[in-house]
Image 1 (cartoon, rainbow, N blue to C red):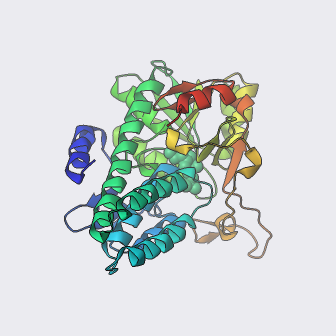
Image 2 (cartoon, rainbow, N blue to C red):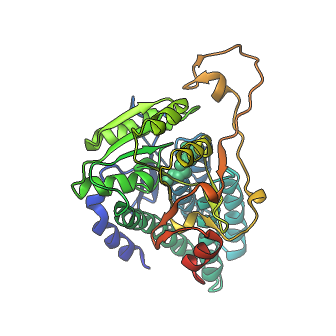
Length: 366
Ligand code: MRU
Protein backbone atom coordinates (compact mmCIF):
# COMPACT_ATOMS: atom_id res chain seq x y z
CA UNK A 1 0.00 0.00 0.00
CA UNK A 2 1.66 3.28 -1.08
CA UNK A 3 2.02 6.02 1.54
CA UNK A 4 -0.75 8.14 -0.03
CA UNK A 5 -3.23 5.22 0.21
CA UNK A 6 -2.38 4.58 3.86
CA UNK A 7 -2.90 8.27 4.66
CA UNK A 8 -6.23 8.33 2.82
CA UNK A 9 -7.29 5.24 4.77
CA UNK A 10 -6.37 7.09 7.95
CA UNK A 11 -8.73 9.94 7.05
CA UNK A 12 -11.65 7.47 7.20
CA UNK A 13 -10.92 6.90 10.89
CA UNK A 14 -10.15 10.50 11.80
CA UNK A 15 -13.49 10.94 13.61
CA UNK A 16 -12.58 8.09 15.99
CA UNK A 17 -9.28 9.68 16.98
CA UNK A 18 -10.18 12.03 19.83
CA UNK A 19 -6.70 11.43 21.22
CA UNK A 20 -3.68 10.94 18.95
CA UNK A 21 -0.96 9.30 21.03
CA UNK A 22 1.33 8.52 18.06
CA UNK A 23 1.96 10.49 14.86
CA UNK A 24 4.17 10.13 11.82
CA UNK A 25 5.00 13.14 9.70
CA UNK A 26 5.55 11.88 6.14
CA UNK A 27 6.95 15.26 5.01
CA UNK A 28 9.66 15.76 7.60
CA UNK A 29 9.99 12.01 8.43
CA UNK A 30 9.57 12.63 12.14
CA UNK A 31 7.88 10.46 14.77
CA UNK A 32 5.90 12.15 17.52
CA UNK A 33 4.28 10.71 20.66
CA UNK A 34 2.41 11.78 23.76
CA UNK A 35 4.55 11.13 26.85
CA UNK A 36 2.18 8.97 28.93
CA UNK A 37 4.39 9.22 32.03
CA UNK A 38 3.23 12.80 32.55
CA UNK A 39 -0.51 12.25 32.13
CA UNK A 40 -2.87 13.45 33.65
CA UNK A 41 -0.80 16.38 34.89
CA UNK A 42 0.82 17.49 31.64
CA UNK A 43 0.15 16.78 27.96
CA UNK A 44 3.60 16.84 26.39
CA UNK A 45 4.40 15.57 22.89
CA UNK A 46 7.95 14.43 22.18
CA UNK A 47 9.44 13.95 18.72
CA UNK A 48 12.51 12.41 17.15
CA UNK A 49 14.29 11.37 13.99
CA UNK A 50 16.39 8.84 15.92
CA UNK A 51 15.20 5.24 16.29
CA UNK A 52 17.27 4.84 19.47
CA UNK A 53 15.18 7.57 21.08
CA UNK A 54 12.04 5.59 20.13
CA UNK A 55 13.57 2.51 21.81
CA UNK A 56 14.23 4.57 24.95
CA UNK A 57 10.68 5.95 24.93
CA UNK A 58 9.32 2.38 24.86
CA UNK A 59 11.69 1.08 27.53
CA UNK A 60 11.00 4.01 29.87
CA UNK A 61 7.26 3.75 29.19
CA UNK A 62 6.74 7.18 27.66
CA UNK A 63 4.99 4.93 25.13
CA UNK A 64 3.31 1.82 26.57
CA UNK A 65 0.53 -0.67 25.86
CA UNK A 66 1.26 -3.60 23.54
CA UNK A 67 -0.26 -2.23 20.29
CA UNK A 68 1.29 1.25 20.78
CA UNK A 69 4.67 -0.39 21.40
CA UNK A 70 4.40 -2.41 18.17
CA UNK A 71 3.37 0.57 16.04
CA UNK A 72 6.13 2.76 17.51
CA UNK A 73 8.79 0.11 16.90
CA UNK A 74 7.67 -0.04 13.24
CA UNK A 75 8.11 3.74 12.97
CA UNK A 76 11.49 3.30 14.71
CA UNK A 77 12.49 1.05 11.81
CA UNK A 78 11.23 3.68 9.35
CA UNK A 79 13.50 6.26 11.04
CA UNK A 80 16.44 3.85 11.01
CA UNK A 81 15.96 3.26 7.28
CA UNK A 82 15.38 6.87 6.36
CA UNK A 83 18.27 8.40 8.29
CA UNK A 84 20.80 5.67 7.53
CA UNK A 85 23.73 6.96 5.51
CA UNK A 86 24.25 3.52 3.92
CA UNK A 87 24.82 3.72 0.17
CA UNK A 88 24.52 0.05 -0.62
CA UNK A 89 22.04 -2.65 0.30
CA UNK A 90 24.36 -4.71 2.50
CA UNK A 91 25.31 -1.75 4.66
CA UNK A 92 21.65 -0.72 5.01
CA UNK A 93 20.57 -4.25 5.92
CA UNK A 94 23.18 -4.53 8.63
CA UNK A 95 22.12 -1.17 10.12
CA UNK A 96 18.46 -2.18 10.03
CA UNK A 97 19.24 -5.51 11.66
CA UNK A 98 20.92 -3.65 14.52
CA UNK A 99 17.94 -1.28 14.82
CA UNK A 100 15.57 -4.24 14.94
CA UNK A 101 17.60 -5.83 17.75
CA UNK A 102 17.68 -2.61 19.77
CA UNK A 103 13.93 -2.04 19.38
CA UNK A 104 13.17 -5.70 20.19
CA UNK A 105 15.15 -5.50 23.44
CA UNK A 106 12.86 -2.86 25.00
CA UNK A 107 9.83 -4.74 26.45
CA UNK A 108 9.84 -8.56 26.40
CA UNK A 109 6.17 -9.46 27.02
CA UNK A 110 4.27 -7.32 24.48
CA UNK A 111 3.91 -9.68 21.52
CA UNK A 112 2.84 -6.85 19.17
CA UNK A 113 6.42 -5.56 19.37
CA UNK A 114 7.90 -8.71 17.81
CA UNK A 115 4.96 -9.09 15.42
CA UNK A 116 5.45 -5.56 14.06
CA UNK A 117 9.24 -5.87 13.77
CA UNK A 118 8.93 -9.21 11.93
CA UNK A 119 6.35 -7.75 9.59
CA UNK A 120 8.57 -4.77 8.76
CA UNK A 121 11.52 -7.11 8.34
CA UNK A 122 9.68 -9.20 5.74
CA UNK A 123 9.14 -5.99 3.73
CA UNK A 124 12.83 -5.08 4.13
CA UNK A 125 13.88 -8.45 2.70
CA UNK A 126 11.40 -8.26 -0.19
CA UNK A 127 12.48 -4.74 -1.13
CA UNK A 128 16.18 -5.56 -0.71
CA UNK A 129 15.95 -8.05 -3.57
CA UNK A 130 15.73 -5.13 -5.97
CA UNK A 131 19.14 -3.99 -4.73
CA UNK A 132 18.16 -0.33 -4.27
CA UNK A 133 18.48 1.14 -0.72
CA UNK A 134 15.86 3.81 -1.50
CA UNK A 135 13.35 1.09 -2.38
CA UNK A 136 13.90 -0.36 1.13
CA UNK A 137 13.50 3.08 2.75
CA UNK A 138 10.14 3.67 1.07
CA UNK A 139 8.90 0.12 1.78
CA UNK A 140 9.68 0.32 5.51
CA UNK A 141 7.85 3.64 5.85
CA UNK A 142 4.85 2.26 3.95
CA UNK A 143 4.72 -0.84 6.12
CA UNK A 144 4.96 1.17 9.36
CA UNK A 145 2.12 3.44 8.21
CA UNK A 146 0.08 0.42 7.25
CA UNK A 147 0.58 -1.17 10.70
CA UNK A 148 -0.46 2.15 12.28
CA UNK A 149 -3.64 2.55 10.23
CA UNK A 150 -4.55 -1.13 10.63
CA UNK A 151 -4.26 -0.84 14.39
CA UNK A 152 -6.79 2.00 14.43
CA UNK A 153 -9.10 0.13 12.05
CA UNK A 154 -8.85 -3.06 14.16
CA UNK A 155 -9.59 -1.13 17.35
CA UNK A 156 -12.76 0.36 15.86
CA UNK A 157 -13.79 -3.06 14.59
CA UNK A 158 -13.23 -4.66 18.02
CA UNK A 159 -15.27 -1.82 19.47
CA UNK A 160 -18.13 -2.60 17.10
CA UNK A 161 -17.99 -6.36 17.79
CA UNK A 162 -17.43 -6.02 21.53
CA UNK A 163 -20.16 -3.44 22.01
CA UNK A 164 -22.76 -6.13 21.21
CA UNK A 165 -21.77 -7.80 24.49
CA UNK A 166 -22.31 -4.61 26.49
CA UNK A 167 -25.88 -3.87 27.51
CA UNK A 168 -27.30 -0.39 27.83
CA UNK A 169 -26.73 0.70 31.43
CA UNK A 170 -23.81 -1.68 32.01
CA UNK A 171 -20.98 -0.99 34.41
CA UNK A 172 -17.63 -2.29 33.19
CA UNK A 173 -14.73 -3.12 35.45
CA UNK A 174 -11.30 -2.72 33.85
CA UNK A 175 -7.65 -3.03 34.80
CA UNK A 176 -4.69 -1.11 33.33
CA UNK A 177 -5.04 1.29 30.42
CA UNK A 178 -6.19 -0.17 27.11
CA UNK A 179 -7.49 3.01 25.52
CA UNK A 180 -6.19 5.42 22.90
CA UNK A 181 -3.02 5.83 24.97
CA UNK A 182 -2.17 2.12 24.67
CA UNK A 183 -2.72 1.86 20.91
CA UNK A 184 -2.44 3.90 17.72
CA UNK A 185 -5.73 5.46 18.88
CA UNK A 186 -9.23 4.48 20.11
CA UNK A 187 -8.25 1.41 22.19
CA UNK A 188 -9.01 -2.27 22.78
CA UNK A 189 -11.00 -2.91 26.00
CA UNK A 190 -11.60 0.83 26.45
CA UNK A 191 -12.30 0.95 22.71
CA UNK A 192 -15.29 -1.32 23.34
CA UNK A 193 -16.46 1.02 26.10
CA UNK A 194 -15.94 4.00 23.76
CA UNK A 195 -17.87 2.38 20.93
CA UNK A 196 -20.79 1.44 23.21
CA UNK A 197 -20.84 5.04 24.49
CA UNK A 198 -20.82 6.45 20.93
CA UNK A 199 -23.77 4.15 20.14
CA UNK A 200 -25.67 5.95 22.85
CA UNK A 201 -25.49 3.28 25.56
CA UNK A 202 -25.29 4.52 29.12
CA UNK A 203 -22.09 2.85 30.19
CA UNK A 204 -20.02 3.41 33.31
CA UNK A 205 -16.50 2.31 34.10
CA UNK A 206 -14.89 1.18 37.31
CA UNK A 207 -11.10 1.21 36.93
CA UNK A 208 -8.47 -0.16 39.23
CA UNK A 209 -5.62 2.26 39.94
CA UNK A 210 -3.23 -0.44 38.57
CA UNK A 211 -0.21 -0.46 40.84
CA UNK A 212 2.67 0.15 40.57
CA UNK A 213 2.60 2.61 37.62
CA UNK A 214 -1.03 3.69 37.99
CA UNK A 215 -2.15 3.31 34.38
CA UNK A 216 -5.76 3.13 35.63
CA UNK A 217 -5.64 6.09 38.00
CA UNK A 218 -3.69 8.33 35.63
CA UNK A 219 -4.53 7.26 32.08
CA UNK A 220 -8.01 5.71 32.23
CA UNK A 221 -9.41 8.52 34.34
CA UNK A 222 -7.88 11.13 31.99
CA UNK A 223 -9.15 9.43 28.81
CA UNK A 224 -12.64 8.70 30.09
CA UNK A 225 -13.12 12.15 31.61
CA UNK A 226 -12.09 13.71 28.29
CA UNK A 227 -14.96 11.82 26.62
CA UNK A 228 -17.49 12.36 29.39
CA UNK A 229 -17.75 8.63 30.20
CA UNK A 230 -18.49 8.19 33.93
CA UNK A 231 -15.57 6.58 35.76
CA UNK A 232 -15.03 5.47 39.36
CA UNK A 233 -11.54 4.78 40.67
CA UNK A 234 -10.78 1.89 43.04
CA UNK A 235 -7.54 0.45 44.39
CA UNK A 236 -6.52 -2.94 43.00
CA UNK A 237 -7.47 -4.71 46.23
CA UNK A 238 -11.10 -3.55 45.96
CA UNK A 239 -11.96 -5.68 42.91
CA UNK A 240 -13.29 -8.57 45.00
CA UNK A 241 -15.78 -6.51 46.97
CA UNK A 242 -16.91 -4.60 43.86
CA UNK A 243 -17.76 -7.84 42.06
CA UNK A 244 -19.23 -9.54 45.15
CA UNK A 245 -21.56 -6.58 45.67
CA UNK A 246 -22.64 -6.65 42.01
CA UNK A 247 -21.33 -3.13 41.37
CA UNK A 248 -19.96 -4.19 37.95
CA UNK A 249 -21.69 -6.30 35.31
CA UNK A 250 -18.69 -7.49 33.34
CA UNK A 251 -14.92 -7.21 33.11
CA UNK A 252 -13.07 -6.03 29.99
CA UNK A 253 -9.26 -6.12 29.88
CA UNK A 254 -6.57 -6.02 27.20
CA UNK A 255 -3.65 -8.35 26.55
CA UNK A 256 0.07 -8.17 25.95
CA UNK A 257 0.32 -11.68 24.61
CA UNK A 258 -2.23 -14.42 23.95
CA UNK A 259 -1.20 -17.92 22.88
CA UNK A 260 -3.23 -20.56 21.03
CA UNK A 261 -4.35 -22.26 24.27
CA UNK A 262 -6.00 -18.98 25.33
CA UNK A 263 -3.48 -18.24 28.10
CA UNK A 264 -3.33 -14.46 28.26
CA UNK A 265 -0.53 -12.29 29.63
CA UNK A 266 -1.69 -8.88 30.77
CA UNK A 267 -0.86 -6.25 33.39
CA UNK A 268 0.03 -7.66 36.78
CA UNK A 269 -3.15 -8.21 38.77
CA UNK A 270 -5.30 -9.30 35.81
CA UNK A 271 -5.20 -12.91 36.99
CA UNK A 272 -6.64 -11.90 40.39
CA UNK A 273 -9.37 -9.88 38.67
CA UNK A 274 -10.24 -12.97 36.56
CA UNK A 275 -10.40 -15.18 39.66
CA UNK A 276 -12.73 -12.74 41.38
CA UNK A 277 -14.90 -12.52 38.23
CA UNK A 278 -15.19 -16.32 38.05
CA UNK A 279 -16.09 -16.61 41.74
CA UNK A 280 -18.83 -14.04 41.28
CA UNK A 281 -20.09 -15.37 37.91
CA UNK A 282 -19.30 -12.17 36.02
CA UNK A 283 -18.21 -12.39 32.37
CA UNK A 284 -14.49 -11.77 31.91
CA UNK A 285 -13.56 -10.73 28.35
CA UNK A 286 -10.13 -10.09 26.88
CA UNK A 287 -10.09 -7.56 24.02
CA UNK A 288 -7.07 -7.67 21.71
CA UNK A 289 -6.20 -7.50 18.01
CA UNK A 290 -4.96 -10.71 16.37
CA UNK A 291 -1.49 -9.08 16.27
CA UNK A 292 -1.32 -9.88 20.02
CA UNK A 293 -1.76 -13.62 19.39
CA UNK A 294 1.39 -15.70 19.22
CA UNK A 295 1.19 -19.00 17.35
CA UNK A 296 2.57 -21.12 20.12
CA UNK A 297 1.08 -23.69 22.52
CA UNK A 298 3.39 -23.41 25.50
CA UNK A 299 2.31 -21.08 28.32
CA UNK A 300 5.75 -21.61 29.88
CA UNK A 301 7.29 -19.78 26.94
CA UNK A 302 5.60 -16.47 27.82
CA UNK A 303 8.33 -14.13 29.04
CA UNK A 304 7.25 -12.03 32.01
CA UNK A 305 9.02 -8.70 32.24
CA UNK A 306 10.45 -7.79 35.64
CA UNK A 307 10.95 -4.09 36.20
CA UNK A 308 12.91 -1.78 38.48
CA UNK A 309 12.19 -2.43 42.20
CA UNK A 310 11.93 1.32 42.75
CA UNK A 311 8.63 1.30 40.85
CA UNK A 312 7.21 -0.52 43.91
CA UNK A 313 9.17 1.32 46.59
CA UNK A 314 8.10 4.71 45.26
CA UNK A 315 4.96 6.26 43.83
CA UNK A 316 5.36 8.16 40.54
CA UNK A 317 9.11 7.60 40.77
CA UNK A 318 9.25 10.11 43.63
CA UNK A 319 7.52 9.48 46.91
CA UNK A 320 9.19 6.75 48.92
CA UNK A 321 6.52 4.59 50.60
CA UNK A 322 8.71 2.08 52.40
CA UNK A 323 12.17 1.46 53.76
CA UNK A 324 14.52 2.22 50.82
CA UNK A 325 16.40 -1.09 50.76
CA UNK A 326 13.45 -3.48 51.22
CA UNK A 327 13.49 -6.50 48.88
CA UNK A 328 10.97 -6.12 46.09
CA UNK A 329 9.39 -8.49 43.54
CA UNK A 330 8.11 -6.55 40.53
CA UNK A 331 6.75 -8.73 37.70
CA UNK A 332 4.96 -6.43 35.27
CA UNK A 333 2.51 -9.03 33.92
CA UNK A 334 0.74 -12.23 34.93
CA UNK A 335 -0.92 -14.97 32.91
CA UNK A 336 -4.65 -15.64 33.13
CA UNK A 337 -5.52 -19.26 32.28
CA UNK A 338 -8.19 -19.93 29.63
CA UNK A 339 -10.62 -21.48 32.14
CA UNK A 340 -11.17 -18.00 33.60
CA UNK A 341 -11.80 -16.24 30.26
CA UNK A 342 -15.37 -15.98 28.93
CA UNK A 343 -14.29 -14.84 25.47
CA UNK A 344 -11.51 -13.16 23.49
CA UNK A 345 -12.77 -10.26 21.37
CA UNK A 346 -10.66 -9.62 18.26
CA UNK A 347 -11.19 -7.65 15.04
CA UNK A 348 -12.10 -10.95 13.38
CA UNK A 349 -14.77 -11.95 15.88
CA UNK A 350 -15.12 -13.39 19.38
CA UNK A 351 -13.27 -16.60 20.23
CA UNK A 352 -14.85 -18.72 22.96
CA UNK A 353 -13.62 -21.87 24.71
CA UNK A 354 -12.16 -24.27 23.70
CA UNK A 355 -9.57 -21.70 22.60
CA UNK A 356 -7.17 -24.33 21.27
CA UNK A 357 -9.79 -24.85 18.54
CA UNK A 358 -11.37 -21.41 18.15
CA UNK A 359 -8.20 -19.28 18.15
CA UNK A 360 -6.43 -21.19 15.33
CA UNK A 361 -9.74 -21.14 13.39
CA UNK A 362 -9.98 -17.37 13.87
CA UNK A 363 -6.41 -16.85 12.68
CA UNK A 364 -6.83 -19.17 9.68
CA UNK A 365 -3.74 -19.52 7.56
CA UNK A 366 -2.87 -15.79 7.61
O1 MRU B 1 3.15 -2.04 31.18
P1 MRU B 1 2.13 -1.53 30.22
O2 MRU B 1 1.46 -0.26 30.66
O3 MRU B 1 2.70 -1.44 28.81
O4 MRU B 1 1.02 -2.66 30.20
C1 MRU B 1 -0.08 -2.52 29.37
C2 MRU B 1 -1.11 -3.57 29.53
O5 MRU B 1 -0.97 -4.49 30.30
C3 MRU B 1 -2.29 -3.48 28.63
O6 MRU B 1 -3.41 -4.03 29.24
C4 MRU B 1 -2.01 -4.25 27.33
O7 MRU B 1 -0.79 -3.83 26.76
C5 MRU B 1 -3.09 -4.09 26.34
S1 MRU B 1 -3.13 -2.44 25.74
C6 MRU B 1 -4.32 -2.29 24.56
